[in-house]
Amino acid sequence: MSLRLRLLLGPPSPLVAQVLSVTSLVALISGALSLSNLLGSISCGAECLGYGVLVSALSGEFGSLFHAWLIPIWAVLAVSMYLVSINSARTLRGTLSTVASIGGQETRLAGLFLTRHLILSTVGLFLGTSLGLVVAQVGMRMAAVLASAPYEVPALMPVDILTLAALVYGAALLGCLPPLLRIGRGGLGGGVKR
Image (cartoon, rainbow, N blue to C red; front, side, top):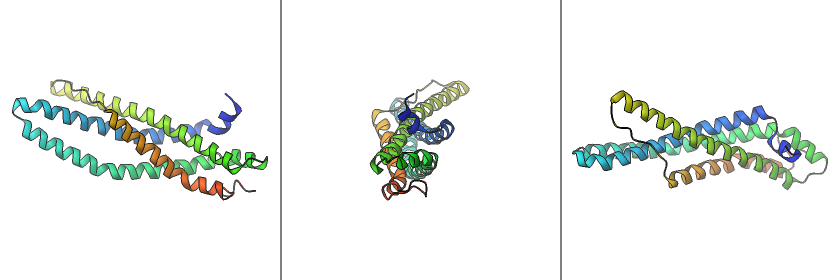
């Protein structure tokens, strides 16, 4: 592993904890998205059985409930990313201080911090999307076995993955703005000063 990558990622245990916190929130959102897609596909097939009105009403209610909860979940994701960025800034305080003391520019320091945060967000996005989809599929499989019903496979549409990416990267950029502004002013909580 190169020195730059080691400086960028910092100690492994805080990085793993930060990735897991992002992953769990993304998994929650991706699982809900895949289940809402499943309910929409069931409503299309239920019309042939005469249950179309009931299933489409339930699908509409579930969809509106999901979209109503999407805003608070995004807010929790944004707050989580902010806390992760604060924790990341604390984790990298020594590294940033060292780089600043040997003449590193604020743009380099901000670049290190932003790159670490984007790597953390990308890993959390991939792991969380996969985990949420797997949990939704296992849950639906278990429900189908218990109810002796046909198995419907929850899936994510490309627009869902783009929505998740926009949520995660938007929250990541919002979350890392305060530490980036502190780096630009010449300090990171007293750790990086000239």
